Amino acid sequence: MLFREAPADFKKEIDVVGCYIQHAGKFVLLHRRAHKSNGDKLGLPAGKVDSGETIHQAMSREIKEETGLDVSEKNLEHIGSVFVRNEGHDFGYHMFVTNLSTKPEILINPKEHQAYLWTSPSEALEMDLIHDLDECIRTYYRESFINL
Image (cartoon, rainbow, N blue to C red; front, side):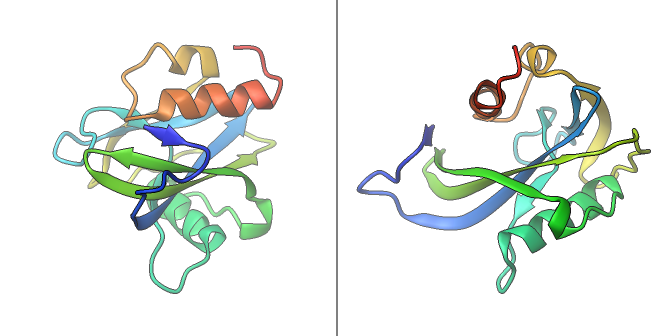
């Protein structure tokens, strides 16, 4: 469950970052390996913020690790943060977007993902997404004035 403001009993364990890597009206979704949390579902390039990292540093690192793309921190726009409660765990989720002028080759990390795809927001909402990603997509793209 997503919250715009932290519930009174919210006990944040970690911070997580995720990024909409966009090109020509579509963005990248990664197909998670079955043995990973949210296994066999689709999600954004994302991951935990390591100790000592800023959220921008973490996002740049996670994009490189999961897609092979070098996206500098200055090309990452922080578009918002929410508070997430999932299966008894509380964490901060920080969303980013980066817009690419050319469609890059994605080199997935085979230990974490089995495939990737480029999709529109409306197409993504019909897919088997990781928890709460549908709400994040609706929130971001509605606020960005892109028609779902």
